[in-house]
Image 1 (spheres, helix red, strand yellow):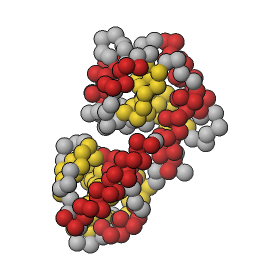
Image 2 (cartoon, rainbow, N blue to C red):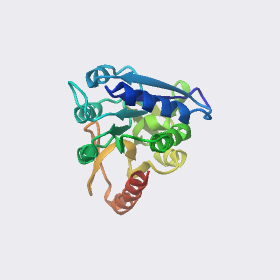
Image 3 (cartoon, helix red, strand yellow):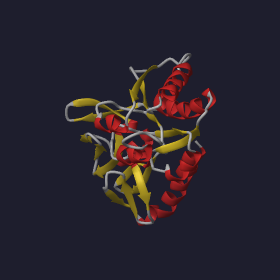
Image 4 (cartoon, helix red, strand yellow):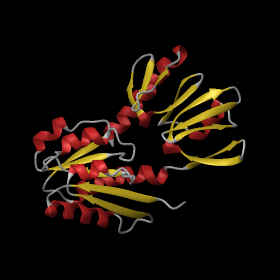
Length: 240
């Protein structure tokens, strides 16, 4: 495995619970063969202003001074460096307001290690199963991580791989890309497009809308399969 670091963010202005989440996270990684790092924030504004760190999972309190967790969530959904959010709160009634496309769960204080481990395990498994895909371009061999791919567009015997950082033209047909990506969360929605469902905000009968605001058309002959596979993907996400 190339050097992978699992990054955790904790945003809670209560030092007691902040420390408790941090200690639970450290215990989770006791027997894991992967590095981890914890970034601590005691104010929501500090988290939002720091977009320099990739955060695989953010443990976020609801009630904080100056900027509450729900407001932080709305801002975090616009930030490409924050990938998953789990609320940790003593206000269980706030669960109904905590839903967002990055929100993976809600933990009520007081909590146990198992409550924290449950969500760490889900994101950890996704992280270690993420892999680099080998492509060729005009300069030779390049590697692009699966989770960085937003969508792929076909152009004859070439494809353009779009990521949040830019795009790369690779020597590969869309069918070959589909085979290498090996199923969900990647889904062929058109003769010219494969999308990564982890980046999809909404799917209608004819259009896939990305979190960035971009859209791709769903081909007529793909619509039934897209609907079935997207429902399968949503069930899997809901289960996890």
